[in-house]
Image 1 (cartoon, one colour):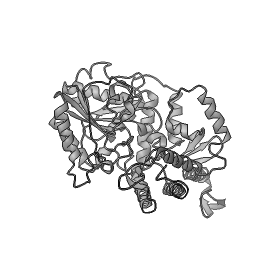
Image 2 (cartoon, rainbow, N blue to C red):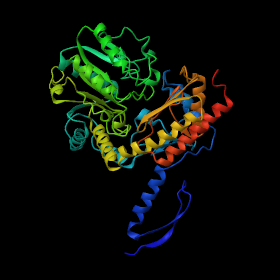
Image 3 (cartoon, rainbow, N blue to C red):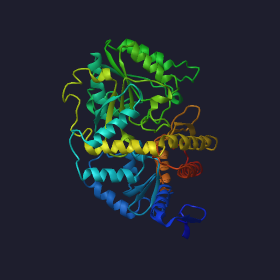
Image 4 (tube, rainbow, N blue to C red):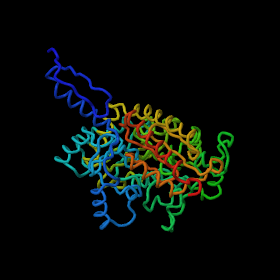
Length: 488
């Protein structure tokens, strides 16, 4: 059938209108596709003070009931959101924000993904609970096994990150018959009792006594090297220090070495490529299993499907979550066949979870993996991430307080410093101004600490990434021109 022109359309963020020809039978599909692309490429639009009046009212209504201790980004923003589309969020006052937060790298498919929404709704109408076999679980489990790095083809699913990490430690202890665990400074694996002692910063203080047999050693955070050395001249001294620390503090019963390929909570820290293989060697030297915590780095976040793929390291166990369900609370422990068979971990009900792998969670995992594959989101993470990283690295030449910019894929970190020589971080007062000024311009970002973390949804477009970088540059110029940032 001959196509005919039936009108013009102009995308809100486009520079020109385009005449569209199509077969009449394809009208609905084409209009739907155009509409979806326009939504997914939205740019910031702020029309009220931030937070607006409706946001303030809803935030205050929550505060009347919520106990202290809510997420810092929520407290500082004071914004109430209504809905999201792709890499944007719209608040209840109608303001549209670019999302460089993604719920701490959770919203891998962004917000309002149509296939995910449809699949979850259909599954919720049929069956929501239980760990019995279902067609959807079987399909999702095969997809997860196919995407997992060899030889990690066995797994259990859970609800949250800490639950999965604790399960991984139980598996490691079952397999090795030992009990001690090595973690890293700057590491974060959850807030439950079994992993609290493996938090690599001061946030665990006040929660003692902590479990015994947990040892912390330095991570290769080269910009903030605890030994004041410079890479590569340091010769990876942190690794040798770790060996000595383990030898002198361990009872000789190391079951696991638990490490993030790239550290998230510490500030999106990217170690040298040789660091993770060296950590693997330490595990082997101690007869321990290597556990890679890929809660943040998995599912395409770093421009590869898995963070370990950047160095070719093959862990014995891997913990996954966050972007795994694109917002649905699901996590998992992937392991080798040998580890999976170890007792008591492999005894009936010994590694199960009431919510783990329920039909809704399984559908969320399956839809996430399908979208990552079909929409080529690993490639998008790598390509858009490289552009965004280069754009942000250029800020070092413009602003004295930008000390370091690093990243892999859509996992980027920025260090803000008072002095490039001492590398002392900017004060919290200044960084909270940065957060609020960015929000006021339509950018939601983890920018309230001297180490900014950037981890937008994997569906973010080049245009959106550039818009976010431009807002951040504008905010930095505001700080330079209006704040005494050295002394604050």
